[in-house]
Length: 581
Image 1: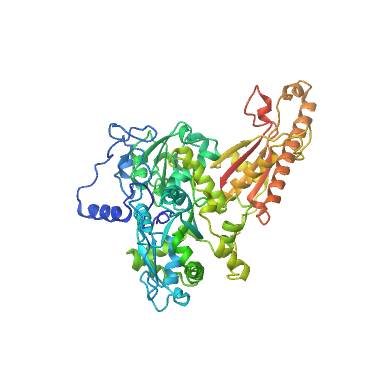
Image 2: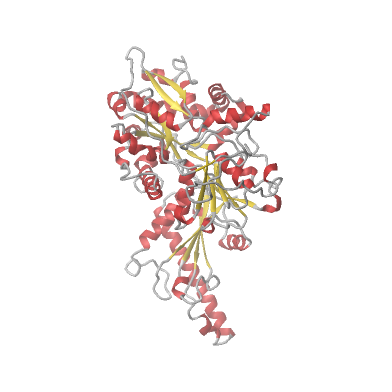
C-alpha cells in the first residue's frame, strides 16, 4: 500500500498506517496551519531518547546545517516511544439489506484503489455506470484513512471489508481472530512501487552498514516491515540498530534532516527524493539506499472480507473480485477519467491524482494467480504472510502464535477465474533488463556503483571443480532458494553473483616466480568465474521466464578476500542487489 504519495516534485497525497498516525486529517491541518501561520507542534517535539523503542527526554535535535532549509513536507516532528498495535474497540454483526444490497468497502488515499474506484464509477453507491450493478449489488467506497478506525469499522459490522497491506493485516489478525473475525483475503490489488524508501548518510554503503546505526521511522507500518525485511536479508535484526520513532513518516524525514546523529530514515515520497536532491543535499551527504521501485515485490496491497459476510454472500465476494479486475482495464484505457473520480473522492486536484498512479502497480489476474496459486514463488501470499508474521513476532509486535496463512488466504475466486479462462489478457508481470556484460558491470561496481544489499553465501565445491554437488554441500538448495528470494523480492533490481576463492596458497605460488604466479592467477580467476556462472545458471533454472539479463555473474579470483587468516571464509559467493538506476 502504502500511503498515498507522489514522485519527486509532486504534491503530496499521503496516508499511512501506524499506531498513532492521524492520516489525512493531520496533513490537512498541517497545511492549513502553514498557510495561516498558526501554532504547530514545536520543532523537535518530544524527544524519544534515541534508544530502541524511544522513551525518555533528550535535548532538541541538532540541525545538520541546511536541515531547516530543506523543503520537506513538514519540518516538524513528534518523537514517540515504542507502541503496541491498537486494540479493537469491540465487535458486532454486519448489516445487510437484501432489497438494497450495498457493500461498504473502506479504502484509504492510495493510488492502488484506482481500479475499484473506476469499477464503481466513483465513491457513491448506485451509479448507473458501476460495473458491480450487473453482479446484483452496489458498493459504497468509504474513505477511512486511519487503519485502526478501518479495523474497528470492520469488527463492529459497519463495514464488510477492510483495506491493508498484507503485512499490516498479519499484524492485526491475532486480535481479529480473538473475536471470531479472522479476515479472509480474496485478492491482491497492487504492489507498492516507488513511494516508500530509505535515505541514509553517504557513509552507509549498504544495508549491512546500518549495524549500530540510528534509524528514524514510523512504527507498526509498512515502512516498519520494509526496514525489518531488509535488515533480515543482511542477517541483522531490530536489535542491531537503534530505532527512533516518529508519529508520522514525514516526521522521520524531518528528524533525519535536523539531527546528524540519525543515520537513516524510512519515509515516503516526495521527502525521500527531496533529501537527496542536489539542490538541497549539500556535499552529497545523503543517498537513497532503496525504494519500493527496486524492492518491487515486498509491500502488497490487498483487501479482506469479514468471514461471516464471505460465507453468507459468496456471490458478492466473487462479484467484487471480478469488478476490480474489470476496473483495471478501465484504468488502463482511461486513466484521465479515473484520476477525475479519485480527485472527487480524495479531494485533491486531478493532475495530482493522475501523477500518484505511478506509485502502484495494479496486479491483474495473472499476478494474482502467482500470488495465490504459485507455491514455488518467493513472493506469493504464504511467503509474504509468513515473513511478516515472523519478523513482527521477532520484533515483539505479535505476541504468541501468529495466525496461519491458510486461515486468512482464500484463493477460491482466483482459482475459479483461472479455470474458466477469464481475464486472459491480464498476464503476470515480466520485467526486462538492459543487456550488460559481466566486465561492464564489474567495472561499474569498482567505480562505486551503489548497492542495496550484499549477502555472503558459502558454497562448498570440490577442489578445482565448479559443478554444484549437493552430496558435497547439502546446503546448496537452501543457497539457491535464498538467491531466488532476493531476485523475486527485488524484482526491479539487478542481482550480481560474485565468485571468490580460497587464498591459502596464493603466497606459495607467488614464491614460485612470476610465470607460475601469473598462470595460477589466471586459473584461479577462471575457476571463480565458472563457479559463479554455475550458480547463476542453477538460479535461472529455478526461475523460468526470468530475463537472464537480470542476473549477472563474474569471478573475483584472489582479489577480494575477507579474512587473511581463515582462508575458508574466502571460498564464498557474494550476492549483491543493485539498483538499475
